[in-house]
Amino acid sequence: MASKPRVKVPKSAKIGDMVEIKTLISHKMETGLRKDKKTGENIPRMIINSFVAKFNGKQVFKSTMYPAISANPYFAFFLKVPEAGELELTWTDDNGSSESTTKKIAVS
Amino acid sequence: MTKRIQLKVIGRRDFVLGASAAAAVTALLSATVDKAWAQKFDQAVMKAIGDAKPAEGRVTLELPEIAENGNTVPFSISVESPMTEKDYVKTVYVFAEKNPNPEVVEFNFSPLSGKASAKSRMRLRTTQDIVAIAAMSGGELFIGKRTVKVTIGGCGG
Image (cartoon, rainbow over all chains, first blue to last red; front, side, top):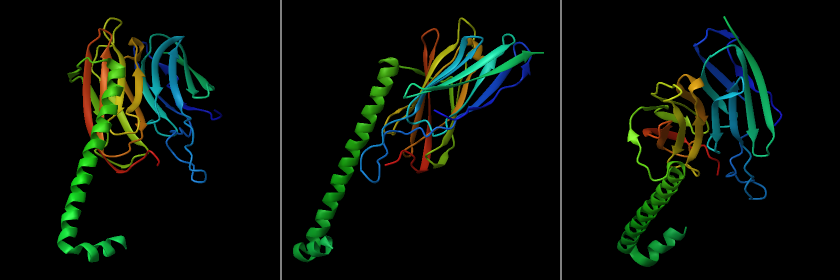
């Protein structure tokens, strides 16, 4: 998985604020149902099957995906900011390879 | 070509009879196909929540009424809940009734989520019902449903 994820996280928030986190990562999300036009064989499934968001090590949101999730998966979810800290986002695909990014949220 | 030849041999009336019989067979076939989809869907739901009967309500599914491109259909799900340590939405299961794999996604929330709401994009093979089942921390289950018309299917063939 080579691509850099694109993430929208507010730089600062008030304690107790509900902030929306938006994420996008490029990935083909091969369903395993498509046929190779030349050989007539199914192209094997290759999708990102898990996306996890942790804030200061505690899980906020997790998504388990099936092939019905579109290519370049987009996720938006909420975080109720409990304190200043770091949001860690991790995507993992069928090969077990993963991509992570972290974003700091300051408390004002 | 073959049809024209048949016409000559079997005559018009027989042909009409034959055609209506063929139509009946097709109708029957499509009924069995529908049944197969329903079975797959039921199995997927069974795997997620067992044979529990979720109550209607509390789950809101937002989807376009008509999706022109089945490859990316935006959807948003939200569940009414106080989202406290004691009472929050644990998991939301999303199913598409007539996709080759009925499972679409599972969202796990936590009290840190603040609200049980998430957005993403899904592939839809054809016009069908989308079902979301929310499992609360206390074990209750709620279900929401939404029909989407799909102009061009998005599961590859």
